[in-house]
Length: 637
Image 1 (tube, rainbow, N blue to C red):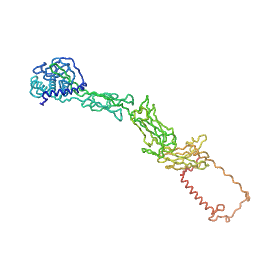
Image 2 (image 1 turned 120 degrees about the vertical axis):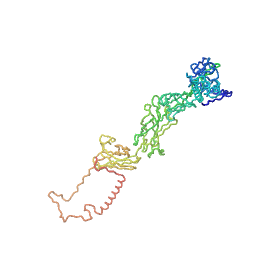
Image 3 (image 1 turned 30 degrees about the vertical axis):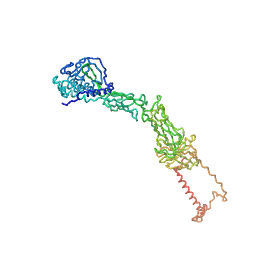
């Protein structure tokens, strides 16, 4: 049988116990205020015999081994050697100051009288009685009835081999087991601390955690938040050392919110007992309850629901002939919800600087030094729409060719209080330079049509491309429209008035391109319209219709004057006259190497032929330089 050992009683040990008791009493005064079932002193009442064996009397040969029942509570002797408390007993309530016992002793006694002592089983009650007395005073317990050894089982056997031999072994085993469990119990000396955390990326999210030096379980209650696991404000069976995810619940969408949390945990048996005292008799102990750890905390600052706006922009067209810079701006909340104000959406303010450059911007590269500010755009969202798409047009015009690039920004300092309070401190967002969807190219394409022509002649138009030119170049065409009486020139260039379109001409560098129509058969006024598209087929440029420099007027040629008759001395033959004839042998003939007498002589034709050849060569060169293009040779008009 295992040897159970405790220090023998002495004045020194008693002094140490008294000193320890005073130290622990100060600490336990706080702990016991949290002990469940706190009970104050009650009027005296007589203890009655509980469950056990022996004689219910102040003294007897074998004594009483079991519980004393006081007010329905099974209590057990903690002052072995004293008389059985058969007289009036006083309930001193739950206390950590009983019979000079240490917190460790009180904790152990509380464990076994709570767990095993509230019973009507005499064997179990007798075993608890022996174990409690052994914890309280080992030596007095073992030797009170003359047992000379130092084994708890031996002391039980010394008495119960005569008192109740049939229960002797069971009581021994239980008593030894209960005593061992009591000595293993450790007093709880730690307080609890509760902590709230906030997710920096999402302040309405976070955790709550209870920490303590003791393992404890209990209930956590939240204010202005719920547990992610159950969607409720309370969580039962929570454990120390575990972080539980929470989600803040502001009073209104997007409003700042302060979260509070409280916890009530139990951390095992208290270092206390429910003490009953009887004059000139034993002090007895009942259950002392559990240690209750309580803690609470509140956010140091309100949680601000995050708001991170974003802007997606697209110009109406990547090409324009000038006029206002028009942008389609889509504003959304990337994180959080859109702030509210006065029952509607709070206004968000965004600005854009628009720059013009001669060269195409490169996305992500620094803004070039030659970029000049063309103007500014401003967007203020409405209370009705809030997030969504807005069309923003400048009040200034793109008045010169080049690349116009918008750069949007959102700055916290430009916002209302409702919006600024939801943005991070120092928040600023700026669009990257050269985003393709933010560039408008204004090309420089001009034309000059042939002003006048005669019927039957072709007409031409000169298209001058100076730049900028889209990557991949442009494809040019020229079209001719017939003027219609009663139709304004600007409205004439429609399909029903089209009479001819040139073949497409690819152009990738600045220069002139001439398009020439076939001969025009009908006199009238004709309007040219040039068109340029990029490699994707998108319209880069469309000339104005009906303007003077794109007008060709075709008229009938003036009739040639009739020649004046020359007098002839030779009489005109009459119908009856037969003209003279020459015999075949008398017909004039040309000498080889000569022209007929009516033409030019050989000395004259030579220089003229050489000059004509030179003029033809020069003309061909000029035509090649101007990239002249001819259409079909079928007459038009």
